[in-house]
Image (cartoon, helix red, strand yellow):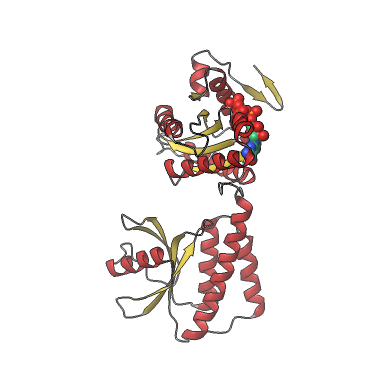
Length: 331
Ligand SMILES: Nc1nc2c(ncn2[C@@H]2O[C@H](COP(=O)(O)OP(=O)(O)OP(=O)(O)O)[C@@H](O)[C@H]2O)c(=O)[nH]1
């Protein structure tokens, strides 16, 4: 390993800390390791499903690419992810490969960066360790910035960034001929019913505990790939991928049922009303929120503890289509 110049280290760090998306950040880290530390081989293995031994591999450069991950390496990757500690692995050509776990912004190991160990090992390990520490510190900073402090869910600011990406992806997919619209994106707002009564009757601390338990039930009962946010107060939202409205409704109904039967400490039964809408490639975030909000208020006004869909309500003539032109809403 050649000693990297201060200028090249700083320039790499500027690139690294300029990233805001986990995936780009991982790539940037691996690229930095490849350029500065170990021009032998760097691969990132992302754990897609640890139980089914499924990893995706991103080759940075210089590494021989193997589509099928050999079983011993698979085991070493699993060990690294599960323990959260660095491991060693000897590949078929007898080269020593160091495996370092990469943690998500929730501090869970989600990927492994594999670096073929170069000749000057001690210096290599020192620099790699330092770079990984910078990466980890930066992830923690991103976490604080992206998440709501009480519940740990993503915050409203993050929503604006993520929803823009979801809309762009829908636009790209609808432009591709091979896409038959098999996966749609939906936006749902969850609002705890009569939450003011909880605060009034039991106090704000118990109210906060209900919000915390509710957010945990969201994380537990909805899928990992669903994007879950706390918008503030007792309003929570999610972005979901589903095949159609019926499937989405089933998921949200099931979740509503889970909340209804959960014994919230001290308070007992809590119910939620939910409004949801399909996201289109022509939307801006305020339009999506408005549609889900309108259907949420329909649910609130028709007995609460239920799920309403904007498109169905419009089709049934129960709501008038909310056409927003510029800032003027036309009904
Ligand atoms: N404990 C706690 N309460 C909050 C927080 N943010 C907002 N609230 C309270 O949430 C309550 C929301 O009440 P409203 O939106 O008026 O309505 P509601 O009682 O939930 O009734 P419906 O929504 O009509 O079913 C208010 O009393 C707010 O003070 C918070 O962070 N913690």
